[in-house]
Image 1 (tube, one colour):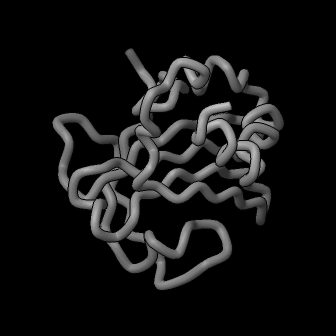
Image 2 (tube, rainbow, N blue to C red):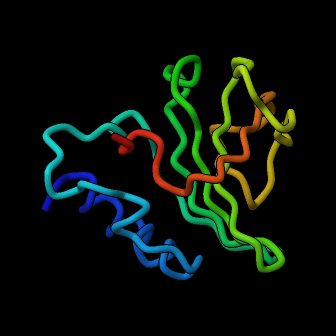
Length: 129
């Protein structure tokens, strides 16, 4: 089993992706053939509060200037995949200012401005080929 697959299992990401109604193999394609973990600079975090069920893959603070924060979440029956960044992408759908703290978002996001891309492709960004 690849390192990323072990991390996804240990953090309950695989189970949560299934709870979102998504196929783990479709969201994380090619796990068995990975040579290197493309998410080695990310922290995986599952949150469930206030009607939200969320999977986060957020880069470490030092890497947030060039790596996206990804989140998959369900709210009021709809599943979303967001790509969030500090830089302004060519196309973005909203600007999100993270609160100073809460029980939904990862602590690495607090107090920062993020550009949000609503990605209709649910596949993990760093595993697309």
